[in-house]
Image 1 (cartoon, each protein chain N blue to C red):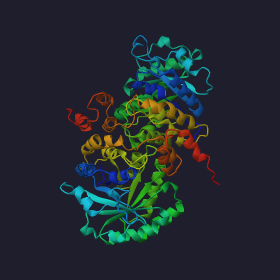
Image 2: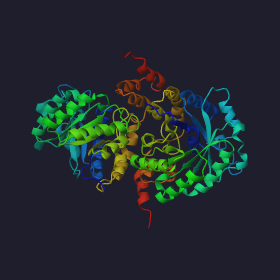
Image 3: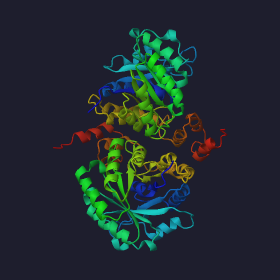
Image 4: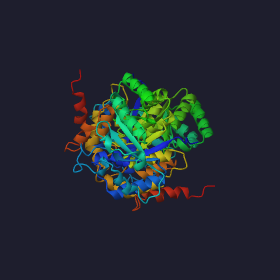
Length: 316
Length: 316
């Protein structure tokens, strides 16, 4: 028996954009939009809503900025009930750029924030909400956030924030299912008026399993990406999630098609997935940035030295 | 706090042999033996003990037969506390070939059996046990075994069988963590005098997670392979399992080294891992043989047709 409250948010183009500076061909983005629509996915997150004053369009593709007209070029002429989401980072958005929701093709804005920055995230989200958008706050790096800090942030979110959904984000791919269970239960316990979401990275091949674990404990907003694309090890693979969920509205076949035609060829050009240095940062609860840098050198398969580089650091 | 009863059994060469007809270079097998020994792994399963009367050494490499002298060529001169295991299939072993354990480099013999063939497996195992070997029975294809058949088999194993360990084998990579929990609990409940093991296939990227789930519910014998090598999607990756376990005797670094030097190059020659047709057979609870056949054709990326081939079959 399926749970009708469950929503899938695909962030293929948004999270995938972190490995190619948001430079996807329009043809691929349109094919993805159509496939996700046909598959019954609820939301497609297409990129970031960053300020053009802070980032240059010489350095980044259009999905770093998500202009309304660029989004319309993707969606025009394709039958779809799917909603469009964009992500906003604290401090990187030109708030005057954000039109009222009624004038925009965007339905949802998600704000990614560390627990300690939650005041700033709440201020942003409440403004987006006032403009008519659905909103979420995505609490990043939960695996290295102090429990006391998390408790404070969650109470504040419950009391002051208009976001409908608060996400557990396992940025480092460091959570095991027991940790995931405890966090989702804690979020559910404090956030009585909100839905809980899960965004799981796949460093240790636990992205899908931690998403299932989150469903078991009551999370209803589930992030996934086609063929698991995303920064470093990538995310929970959408095709596995759809294979697992029982709601008859979901159809895996359009997703199988775009993997065949688009994402298998793309994987030959850009790298993501189960790669040992990302597994190492996951198991050591570290940001993947050092692993991403090391993968660009000629020592990219020198795993022992990479592993030892963490234990040789002075800590105390 | 770690559980000292937990044992890791590496089946890199045994399960990996299913994708290259058991043709590994001695150099790779020796490097693997040394790395596993240095990493603190408890058992290395090196191959099958099949009868040379039934299978030709023209068609298969030496690890289809596991002659004692071939094993000694691998282990000689390498300091190790690791035990050696071989696998035996019901009906494929020449029982007269099996010397007493005291005369053999083999410590453990594992018999793979469907629940319905458990009488035959018990007869074999009890004979191996009499010859002085440690023994296990590995119940295959648990995801499509009737609960009543499983109950009967487990009671019989508890009462009649000398094997110290009975394994849950997710042959199809079809189990989710809830199913794994129920099966491991059922095995533990009935098999009061035995240990329970887990052998998880990785079709849906759940091999590692289902192994963790089994640990949580009391399984102490854990199968894994280097870089997840094995038939079709492969197995629980050993490096992730060692990264998770807390027993200080385990050292991940020798495993990182052989992945760098041996298994990354090997993966360019033979295929295993997260590949969509194997994910499909996992989610549909099917044997991977159709997917393995399809991967050898020029339609190997035609996922939709492969998926639809299952639903178009007449069932009733």
